[in-house]
Length: 173
Image 1 (cartoon, rainbow, N blue to C red):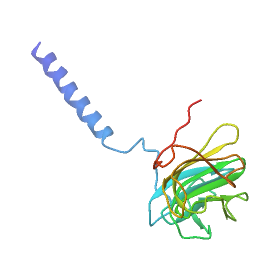
Image 2 (cartoon, one colour):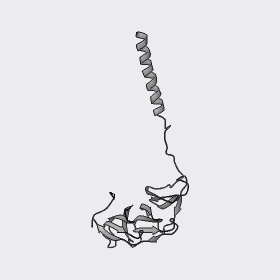
Image 3 (cartoon, one colour):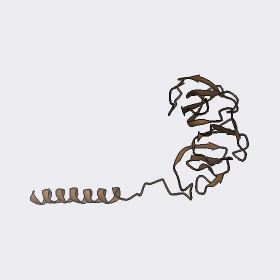
Image 4 (cartoon, helix red, strand yellow):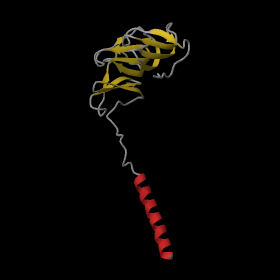
């Protein structure tokens, strides 16, 4: 009886050591470092076709190989991009002071939208091809609140939450 209790306790100790040993290793990790974008914060990600795009503190970066390597896109400004989305083969980028830009050619060329100033750090795709942008800082006469575009980010209209700083948006079906 004493030997059985001793073996049972030894088995518990052995299993505890085995579990601790395997749980302390990153054997199940699925994340790995990529080659960029480096040198600043990443605020948002989107995918268009097979490319991944990142809105960062230093502009927009893209990857053509699932995030292993990144290249900077010239957006005609060196402004932080707080939000970036893709919809209908268009992309919209919300900047921290120069408004919202849009691209219709996978980010090769960008044009400034009718929202040409203020700070936008949230842009989301809605239903019926509507895009919503949240402005949280007013400059040059623009009013903070929620803006909407029905033409892929080219033109915008103020829709609500006027004079409120918008830091996040969510849609519900």
